[in-house]
Length: 122
Length: 145
Image 1 (cartoon, chains in turn yellow, red):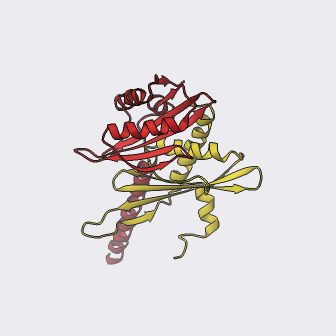
Image 2 (cartoon, each protein chain N blue to C red; image 1 turned 90 degrees about the vertical axis):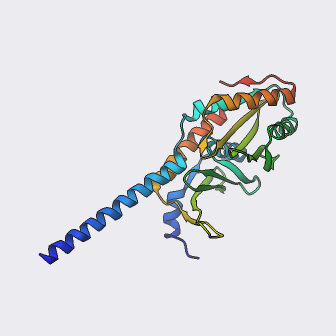
Image 3 (tube, rainbow over the protein chains, first blue to last red; image 1 turned 135 degrees about the vertical axis):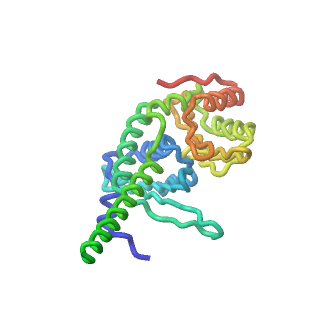
């Protein structure tokens, strides 16, 4: 149970800070970007700021996006993507964390767009 | 001679491993980020506004509509306004419906989902969903722009 890479390195990859304190807008925008990407929402915890979704594409990809207050003026959004591949005859699928930086960069670009669209009621 | 053959083999192995890594990265980008329409285009076909500020009424109507269409709800969250549901049959359809207020007197409803392995990117199924929802709500579905 050790992290795949130094924790600071992981967080630099999968976390971004946004200058807003509007948690409701952020959660709505997170649900929105996952919907944009064709994910089905599987779990949400508004008070904890967690949204989990999955998408079936050559196996199954799970996404967990969480919100953490960062100081009094901003929030940190952290995303984790996991690939689940079923093993014939086995009870549990093989899973791995997706660590391609491009995936996280692309996701946060789309999240920024989603925040903009959500704030404009689109 | 043997040495150079070995180094060729090593070079080929490294090349194969590198291309496998590139393929794997392209795969994960495809798996996470691939979408047919732009975010704005997708939202415009899959989102409607209804002239009511009563979000719990809209959420109930969404659940009733999903049931009418043969879906079973997997997850509903009233505070965030999301409902996810699945329909098994010839095809596997998974939907997420999210609602949010627009001002005090309107509610925005957005549908997204997958048909088997593909995201819903064609306007027709959304159109049908919103027609059913309009009937359940006794309200006209309005396009958002």
